[in-house]
Image (cartoon, rainbow, N blue to C red):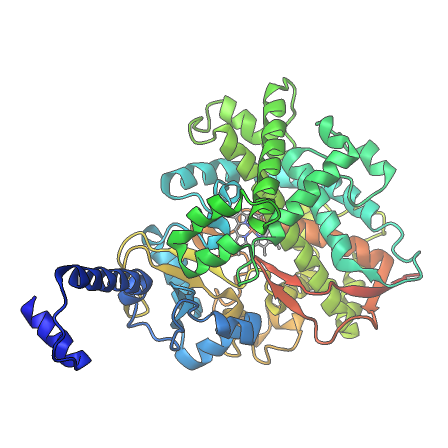
Length: 539
Ligand code: HEM
């Protein structure tokens, strides 16, 4: 203690400075608090400090870089720091993996050490989103995943073709009739939400219009079929989804969570009680959504003859037949996984569909080959089967892959180490957030020469580029045991939609569209101002 006073005296340069005990203890308390705060802020960094990365600004980390470069920030950093680097989301360091071989290591070879996802602050603020498959962990996750996969048998997917086709036909009926250009991204979101609403809940949300569809598809939940309730539900769903921002534009508690996670929950608890704040609105929306979902689930549980076409009914039936542990699929988790389908299946599929049509509209030579393949399949009234979709449209497959590479809907995939593990020569402690940069891989000229050109032919199985490419260079649906469960479902829907669209129409960019296309970075990528197109009916 004497030494401390001596040092303090000489450092402040005051000879007669002899603090009393209470001053000393105040100084100690302040120093301990400063050390505590610094320890809290820098502890996650300390364990991964050897991984290279740009200097981080205290508290906000590298978020200013994100504001500067937008979604391209990780490509810019990968060029500078190599295939594995550090990016600080506020206080939290992320280890970004931007190399296909290293992604394979994280996603497949070392999966047992990195089996879960980290929970970013927008999700930490939303219990509704945490109970889905995406964020559940360890043994609960594997039980849930096995049950869900059993629902996605090829035969079940094939049986969904007529339902999907009915929605698609209805949604795309008279696109040419309006003299105005259409906002295609809105149409595709309505369509994808309807399709997944039917597939997940057995409910016709009726967003993509038409009487005929309501008649042709059974509406199992009476309450849901009432228009105002449905639109209320959908509005809440859209609000809840769009509030899940990954930058500093979310609610105050989410922003605090990015900067000082320990304060997020106390702040959320306070803010959600103050009317008018974004936290208050998000909380109300999530409560209403959960309430509606719980109601749908409990009504469906009571139904004796619930059928087996939709996801919710299948999960409930599996649960009753003891195939699925009842303590894992409690009603709140059933609500969450069913809702997750709506969430995961609408924005992603809609974005992908819109980006393909947008890209093809700007490349008439691609459009020509696509139309030839689609017309060559058979008469326009012939609906392709699931088998046809998988095997008879090779150029369509290439165009879809290339569009998914060009605008990758989920450029980052979040994982977290559950024990100490070595990746790319760096020892990462337990609890490290490891994020796979699918977007960087997709634009790497080593695997995709001229990456900013839209060239479906690069995926032709006979071309040299395809043969040379690393097998995990393009992984828009993720990798390994934690990859997307909806991949086949969404590809089936996207292909059916494109075939139907190009049988009837061609598209060009609207003169009202910005160039280049502007994107927004939420939980998934989105269009800032939508995709606007001019429609021409084919003769
Ligand atoms: C074009 C459409 C879609 C894209 C690009 C996409 C992409 C992804 C990606 C990148 C992941 C993370 C994978 C990983 O960690 O390796 C994922 C996970 C997931 N997706 Fe999709 N998805 C799409 C459509 C769908 C659909 C239609 C559904 C539901 C029917 C769905 C349900 C899920 C679920 C539940 C997970 C979590 C899987 C788990 O953690 O075990 N997705 N998706």
